[in-house]
Image 1 (tube, rainbow, N blue to C red):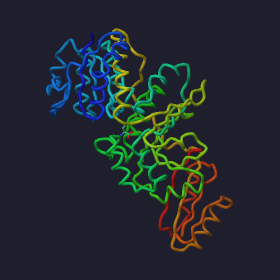
Image 2: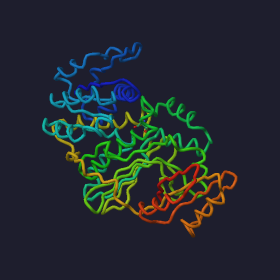
Image 3: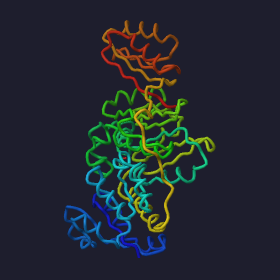
Image 4: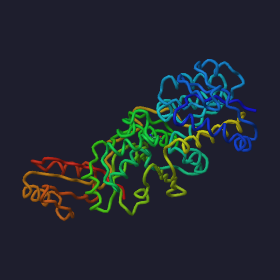
Length: 409
Ligand code: HSE
């Protein structure tokens, strides 16, 4: 029998406890030994549960109990999760976590610590909720050089954008619904401002390209400025607006890493990823594009991935899993690299004829959608270096508004 402790009894933690306790027979069969939840650490009280007797408030009880071999960290945030995880690894306990903030900030260090102490540090649930993506990337795609990773990585924002596109629902109502369904982070700013997706880009890029990427190195923009007008306008170009996380190897040996609202062509498979679903497209030099798809948030889906890691830790109590990347460096991410792109531009002016004349002079031959009533012209540029397109856009004068978004076809 292996004893397990769960730190945190929020949405994901309660899901983990319920699977491990209510499906103990299934877990025993898969782990090839009984897996016993010995402690659940939480500062709150949870009376009336079938497992209320397992709750403790003192982390040291877990740390000092040598019979606890696997610890689940589902508290979220860096502190005290970082100290607790570090202490557990140093004490020879394997750790399974869903905490993307922790992995994105401290992944390289904690992986090394786990290796040095002959235990495992697994975090499948930190990206894509219930979607198996990290282990397949590290193991099944091991023969590849991974060159590019593109994904819809945040269920809450995808749910919100989808509600705006399909139901014409406004932003606040859609966010409230996502929170009610348990998709959103404790602080929804992490979702809507893109930080959650940014952390997942860091983890994917680190694992895919072999070197730590820190959240502050990712150019991150959320969906708070996306309006119903943007969504409607995108539709005129056969596109939907999605929050896209992207990381790519550059010819100079560095990488780019971004999170931003992006117009995705309806022909692209990512455009059909709706609601809380996530999708991650990984490009390998041998496989070409491989797509991972499934529920990216929610109690059961995320707990499923954590429990799989617990089973893996139990089955490999004396063996190390192949998850590794090096420390990062300040100049590793180069977001100023001038890529060839197509940009979506929507400009408004009080003087529509002047706007039309400028558009025809600056972007001759590029087709557009005009809305004289709103004084608006929208278009998608031809493929050119980003710096050149931006220089051209700066030629527009006397605008009342200007929206520029990247595209993905
Ligand atoms: N808040 C996150 C999301 C949860 O909406 O995707 C899963 O990481």
